[in-house]
Amino acid sequence: MILDLFKLDGKVALVTGAGQGLGQGMALALAEAGADIASLDRTGCESTCESVRALGRKYHEAVVDLREASVEDLRKVVDGFVSNLGQIDILVNNAGTIRRTPAIDFSETDWDDVLQINLKAAFFLSQAVARVMMSQGGGKIINIASMLSFQGGITVPSYTAAKSALAGITRALANEWAGHNINVNAIAPGYMATDNTAALRADPKRSISILERIPAGRWGTPDDLKGAVVFLASSASDYMHGAIVPVDGGWLTR
Ligand code: GCO
View (spheres, protein in one colour):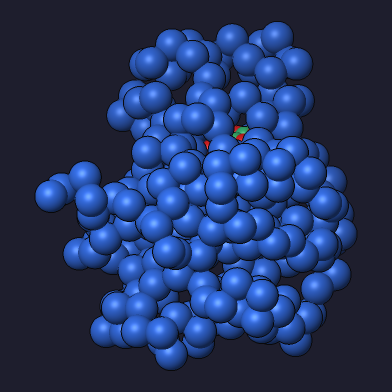
């Protein structure tokens, strides 16, 4: 029956940045759908851990700062999860950072950090996890893109570069790995009320102009991504490859 296709019982989902915000919301959604959770975050994720275990699912975490992690470190983290949880069926590349400075003054550090965390780590984690998925017969990779995968943005050039490229590698990896039963897709959240947009919401001009453009008439919340992430993590989306799915209250249609 159709609703059974959405169930994730017996699956293991690795979510980066699962400690708060969108990552926490998605980790809980996957656990509610039946998955055990492997969490990778730069700090411990006590509240995510508690909620996942309260649902009766296993939770295992690795504390890793993606800004500093080498490709070898990422492979070791993935191996550690496989030894503890037995497998990885779903990867959500959610961890991200943003730096706000006009392009004319933008620093090398703000360029490198954002590209490292939002793009390079997502690519090499996908590579390490895809090797596991290939040996298991398939899996689901979900990249968390952005409105700035489609638009230029204002004073966030390295974020726009990383998120636009993340949309590109979503398609590139989808092409290469579809034949291995690995679905690579992305969710592009709209303007969500999380830490990422705190500066925008605190700026009276920008917060009004953003809100005015959202047809749904409100900022998004972590709960708004729950349906899309479970869908893309489940068998219900088995024929989807390389899609970038906006969950944006209609922002892009404006
Ligand atoms: C900005 C915002 C965006 C949002 C989000 C949009 O400056 O435009 O911070 O980057 O955070 O990613 O989808």
